[in-house]
Image (tube, rainbow, N blue to C red; front, top):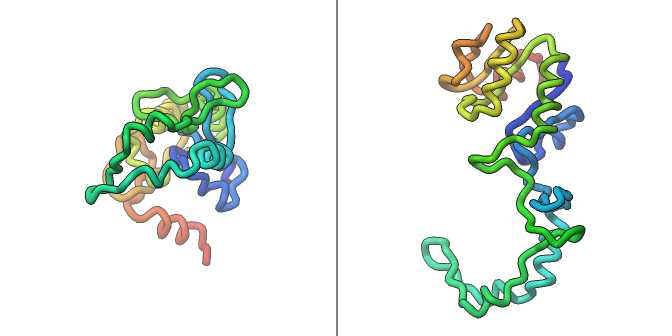
Length: 179
């Protein structure tokens, strides 16, 4: 049975699909985090605040043919960036950007899930990002079976007990006898 889903995705689709034990290794786009105090706020709350604090701001810009925006310097000077309600700190999406590390608590939760597992299933990842690949290495070193379902080569193929080449949705649908 599926005990945990550890995902590198940041879109919350696993939760929307009904999974309850999800570890969002790279965070969530629907949340922002304060770089000062680490307080988290729903993104829609910050979005609404930005709209109210910067009413009419978009009217001061024009979209160029290449999709960039030409923004008047005076409009930029008037822009009120979002800030943390708790400490006034700078906010960013609660996701791991390139070059950042996975927060220690998230890594620890994923590691604990792996230690409680009887096997590791990798579905739809090339494992080129180390934050995911390291769990394949750890599972392999612990003697756990590692099954990889993916189209194309992955960084973990040599460590897999079984590699299934194919579309993740189709393979898992057929394997589970769904439908």
